[in-house]
Image (cartoon, rainbow, N blue to C red; front, side, top):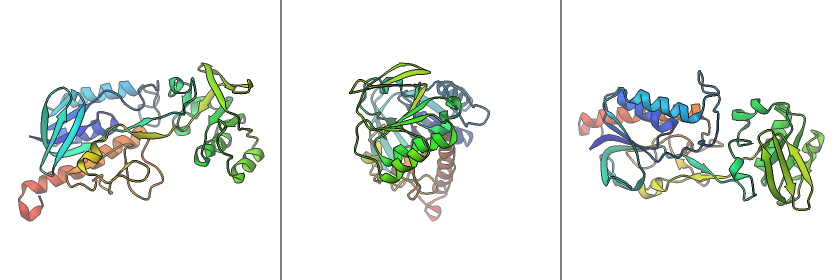
Length: 309
């Protein structure tokens, strides 16, 4: 019986495990080894680690956890979860079942790029999701944004405002955008190409968007705010409330609607916020916050019924 099982070994999960390890808790981290940003060569805005390879950060994190004897890390998949606060049981793909008094879900999200030939395989390398993470590296270059929805299309206006005077918005033949966006795009010098995209070819720094009618546009980088979904259905299995955007509902402490279960990182969201956490530094902070509050809950439960269960 572990004190806590952390499901997911990304920045949120490893940070939570570090907190528990330092508090002399017994904690098991179960990680499937497929982080959301595995294709990215660099991560940014993590103080002292700006420009680090994401996999290098995770490797260093695992090395640090090795200093705490209460922390165990396994590469495996949790395929089923059940139980209640104080006694959860998880079924692993490779090693039977394990039990814990508390659970932290940190399984993250997975990006689902549009079905355009050449787009998905370049995602994270020359097709980027976030201007905060990658805008600086492609400043003053020829950029394109591939977007269907108004919220996605706003990214083109942001890039034109912050990073480049040469931005093209490609809607891939989707429904017309609201007039306020097309008018503002014209005012800001952002052409809107509403033709279907046939394929994307080329190498980083030299990309070609070829349209169904044969026309082409050359770009140095592409931005695409791909739809995303959760990596795992464990939150539903445990009975956690899921918000309309697919994220797991949490409170200010990271606790889900199921007692004894917290969620951290980009799979979790506090209602009222416009978006889930998608930055590495914020994901790590989420893990720390959830673990600190959960450790307090474990402490109080050990004092007896008068202090909580």
